[in-house]
Length: 559
Image (tube, rainbow, N blue to C red; front, side):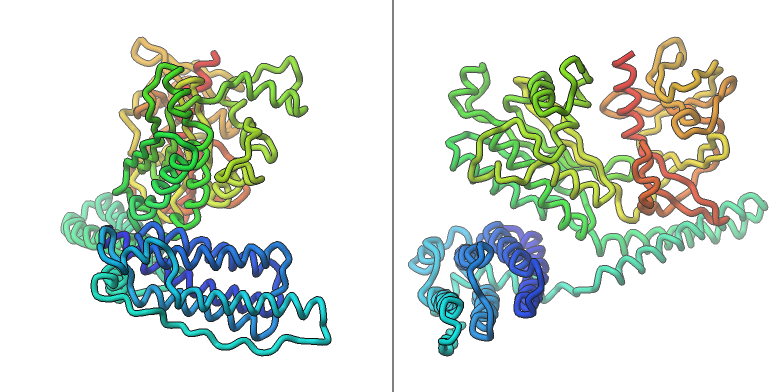
């Protein structure tokens, strides 16, 4: 287990224990949903402990979670005795982490005990909660005979020894090296540093335009320092994608073992850095999609052999940055999704007319509707009422998009694309009518001047460029800036999906800009990743070139 993963667990567990305490306080106050929140936090603790190999803590959290499940189902839990027992479990969990546990691969009786599950001291604390719950249940049945006090449990378990303390000691050491700063303060510092970069960049442009070469030279050094400051502050909020992806590998392994499948998990882009708060909020949607891929996508070894495939299936998780956005792809090489099956299910559900024949990508979008499912099977891992609609809601709350691509018989892929909460993007300004748009450099290949006859009402069409036809997006038509014809500029984009073009009226200077999320009025506009404010106070919309390129390519296939 790497020190980076243990450090991430140390920081995360501190937040989890705070959240657990707050949830117990809410439960004691009678707040609605407190039990559900407490259950989720303990569930998260269990999963995180399992990822870093802290088996005893994982087993203890699992036992605690089982008892909370009874409370969620309506079992009574109130009063100082029951609350005290819950606080005791919280403190005991923290004590287990503090004592340390056997490192992975450790030998000896203590290591075997941890792998087996709970120790006697752990059982004692759990028994105290059981007694409190039983007393609460008896009190509910006989309110005139309240239960007596519950003996205070012992928080300390048996001694564990030096070899057993290895993982816990490393986690505690990692925690001591971490300075915890409220995310709001880091957001403010990052925002200010990005504004400094933009302001210095604007000042440099003014200096160059005035011909003050001495000032230009001095500002060059300041620009470098400002950029270094921004990157340093940005790094304080970032974690590697790999450090939060361990839970996904384990989920695949658990499903494969439970369902009798052979599945290889593959992670690429582990070094991709993402904002910690974004990582926390996107983890559950990714986990849901990974479980779907392993549980429903990948076939059994026998079924794969019958289909002419290898017995071992693949679930891959790939992350990368593109056009100032984070792209996460969850794919499998399983049975895939048949668009006709989706269409027939939609017709049967009344979502489509029998004669409707929408394109495959629009049919895939139906999978995100609440209650829509192709699988009637309920398993340990899925089919419990939480579907792709929950994934879409979670991604939409982050101002992101999610879509499904599939090839029947070959596999499926879910693609999540998320705007970064605050990111410095290098690009150039393009004009379309009265609109100013910032085009990130990431996917831009070249800019070519063309004569365009125009095509009213067609935002997506083909244009001739140097003797060949290219899928293009007419941004004037797309964003309602009126008909354009004559001299236009084609901004040619090139990525793994091929070449497309954006048609604009003018292109301007290159600049750096701090990109912020859209407000809700613009969030649904196609091809917009965010907005930025320039040095003169004007606002520009930042283009999502990847989405625009994908839409242009899709439209050209329909033509």
